[in-house]
Amino acid sequence: MADLKSMMAELQQKRDEIKLQLHLGSMEAEDEWDSLVSEWDKFLSKSQFDQTADEVGEAARELGLKMKAAYDNAKKVVG
Image (cartoon, rainbow, N blue to C red):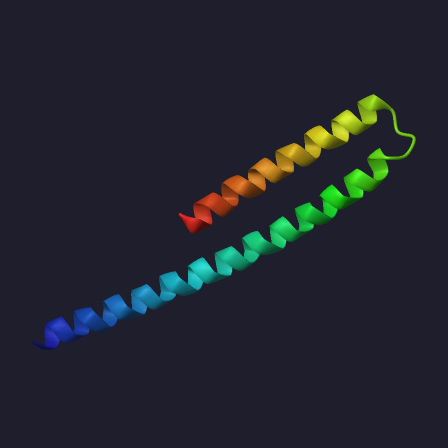
């Protein structure tokens, strides 16, 4: 019976640790997403000015790659 109680306590501790890691991971993903939204807003405002099509295209490509990476990371965190 003591072994069962010990195992249950250990499992509860592991559960709590995993829950905390998921929470911290989701906070990190949210921070990363907020940063990308800020970059998106900057991109939109800059693209309305006198940049060449190549500059706008390159900025859009870079931002798209960052957003895809952030989405992939968020998917890993959520599961």
